[in-house]
Image (cartoon, rainbow, N blue to C red; front, side, top):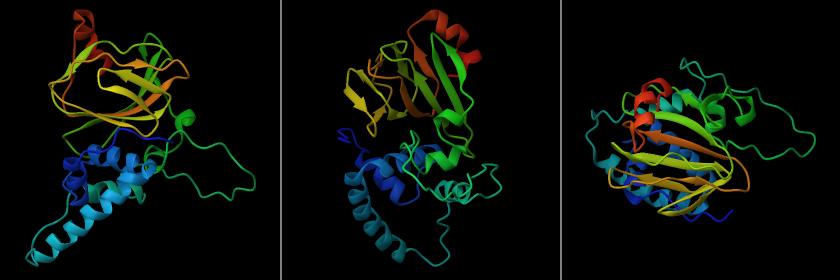
Length: 221
């Protein structure tokens, strides 16, 4: 796997200090599971963060949404059922959803209840306990475009299967695109297979199509 698009230093530093909302943390953690280069970068940020923690007063509150995400992954009362451990006796196909995402949603892509968005696209909404982000899995048919849109805030899009291309280049498995209010684009799924992505936003998308703006509240995007 040749990952070309990585987590920004700003996001990685915030992740290392536990200063990201749960949805952002999930996207970064899933990218890290696929990207050895970013894991090495994270180790350096964590070393700096550890030095900063040592300098904090003993009574300082360092809890945050990263702790909430770890609690969910540990199978706490967040309501996410973790799959039982299995003894594998023969080789199996690699899962589409890597850890920690697979345990976080309770199974691999085929086991999830995908809801139609129209034009062959599907989504799975992923609940979180933060009030900042909206998290979902998207499945876009091979060769099909996503409607042109801009953003009301930040959007992280992590490719898990297939690929897509837009004004910022081609994104394949493991690649992470970070978009903001300045980016207006129309991603197009690659022709090789359906594109499955993890998408995290903190504001609704701004569609160019008037029709999509009308039905947007119904679709929940």
